[in-house]
Amino acid sequence: MIDTQAIKEHIKGIIKALGDDPEREGLKETPDRVAAMYAEVFEGMNYSNHEIAQMFDKTFEDGFETDPGDNMVLVKDIGFFSYCEHHMALMYDMKASVAYIPKGKVVGLSKIARVVDMVGKRLQLQEKIGMDIADIISEITGSPDVAVTLEGYHSCMTARGIKKDNSKTFTYEFRGKFKEDKTLQMYLR
Image (spheres, one colour):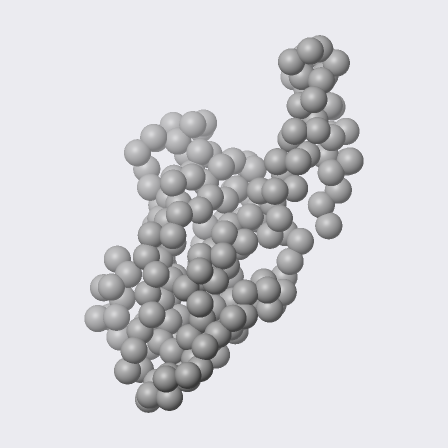
C-alpha cells in the first residue's frame, strides 16, 4: 500500500532541498496535498494485473455463442494519464484504443475504460501500459485476440530535456489475430 506518511516527510525534505521553508504559509499543507494526490494518481500500484482483472470482471455471455472471430469489440480514444518511471514526469493527453475478439462473452464497455485508468495509475513506461492492458483484457474476456494502441505526450520530452512540445509517442500491442491480420490493425490506427 502507498505510505502517505512517508511521502509527506519526503516532500518536506524536497521543499527544504529546493531552498524553501516547508513551514511557510503557502507550503504548510503541501506535503499533505501531495501525499493525497500521489495516493490517488498512483492507486494502480496497489494492485497486480490479476487483481485489476478481478475488480473489473463483469462479462455477459447471453447471445455471444457465435464462432470466435465473427465480432470485434473496439473502444477508441479512452482518455487517461500516467507517470513515466524514469523522471516521474506526467504522460498527458493520453488516448488508448482497446479491441478484442469475443470468445463466447463480452466485458462491459465501462470496464475497459476502468482497466485503462487503473493501469495508468502506476510509475511505468508507455510500452508497459499497453502490455498490461492487453494482459488484463485477455484474462477478463478469455480471448487471446487483443489489441491496445496508445498515444500521448510525455512531459519528460515536452517540458524538460529536449523540449519538443509537439512530439507524440505511439505504441502498439497486437496479440493473436490482431498480430496475424494486418487488416484488423487498421481499425486501431
